[in-house]
Amino acid sequence: MSERKGIFITLEGTDGCGKTTQAKLFKEYFLELGLDFLLTREPGGTVIGEAIRQVILDPRFEEMVPETEMLLYAASRAQLIKQVILPALEAGKVVLCERYVDSSIAYQGYGLGRQYVKKVRAINELATDGLKPDLTFLYDTDPEIVLNRAIGISSDEGISGGDRIERRVPAYHARVRWGYLRLAEQEPERFVVLTTKDKSPQEIFASSKKVLQERFAGIFTS
Ligand code: TYD
Image 1 (tube, rainbow, N blue to C red):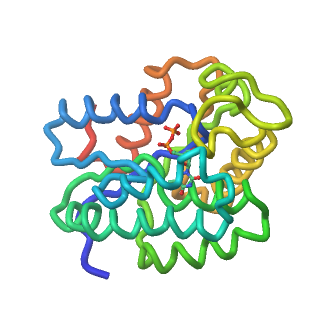
Image 2 (tube, rainbow, N blue to C red):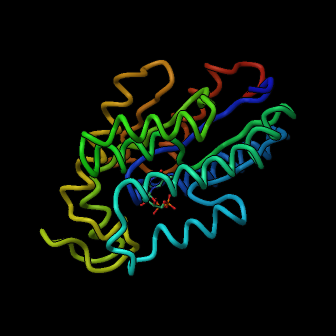
């Protein structure tokens, strides 16, 4: 793998956890600091990745098997890494990515069934060539409350609105949340878990900013 000079930060959490709002606040902060940064997201972030995103999230493709799903996310990721993330890191930029490998382990691994965790890890080792974030923020939220509010009323059969993943049953999203929390336990150095319950986006961001300033003093100032 080529030499990295930048900082790689990822944002994770179940659907509707507020990471896109947080990404906007990070962007304002980075602009204020005059940092050289790159904001990107998964699945997508490249023309090929956006095309793959359409296929993955299309509600018509209910028959998609877990292996196809994990490979498609990994394919979009491989493209994003080589085309966008690595060049930015090599140029010394701060890279902030909404979702990364942890999303696949949580959604395609723990969410679809514990037996898939190993496969998802193996596929992603290949897709990422071992590139890991320096820091990961996990916005921990009760997915059921958020999904009900955002896209429709859930039942044991699933959720009426939303994309192919959002439509999955509440128990699926609960497993994804549980998976994320296990991942954070396994790598406490990399993960920062922020509970979103009863907190405003600004309050949550203030906690994230404090972490950045502690971990990378000199780059992130107040
Ligand atoms: P995203 O655009 O982040 O949706 P949202 O902003 O609603 O959270 O991600 C799209 C969906 O893809 C989301 O339901 C999470 C899912 N996903 C996976 O299942 N595996 C993955 O590896 C990634 C990156 C996303």
